Length: 104
Length: 180
Image (cartoon, rainbow over all chains, first blue to last red; front, side, top):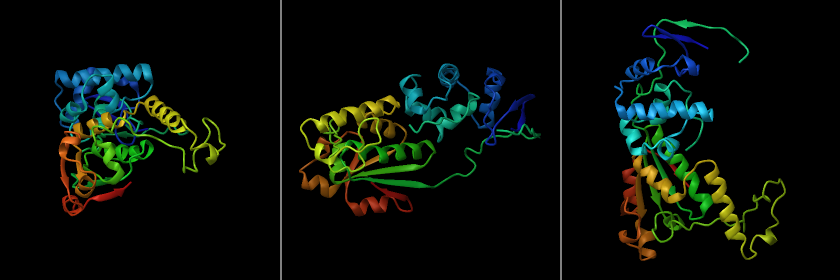
């Protein structure tokens, strides 16, 4: 597994650049990750990111857009506005989680 | 993973989300109105939208039931004529002679709906709503509408129009196409 350095943080990532160690993430790092993909985190982004972190901790897998909508309370349309084009992957990236496995 | 080899990169490793700005398009023709055949097109359309791909769905023939307000909540799944149907939780096939018995379709529909709900996948009307929210486009087939004396008032409000097959082909110029 590669190790990459982001703004002074050394983090383990997979070959696609997604973080692989849940505990290496913190909210400062989330801002750095978001900046890497051109996103400035607002309260609405934080609501999604914090939901993803908490949901992963209890479920052991990354929530899909459907789950972020149905359980996390951020509608699909808003997810696309916050994390344009590829919301599922971008949300997971910023939250320091693996890409979601679910189809829907 | 059996190796523990670690490589340290100096430049940050970042996913290439927007690097390849794509003009990829997907067109899905939904021609079936049974519950089991409604899903493949919706799942693929939804997946494509999640990858930033422009996606258009064209509903024709029996697929019209998926977007018809009075029918979209009642799509059914029947084991009749489906030789792949197994007995619940078993490898044995359901004997076809049992498939048409009264109540079988209702039971099979109920079971399939539960299995779909169990994996967190929405029912067809909700799924279409999600697809539209994700930027998907819904189109209805002109010939099917004329045959069934259906107008836009009978269809979901988010259907963008009743269009001819040639309009759809024109609209999806260069798209990859799925016929389901």
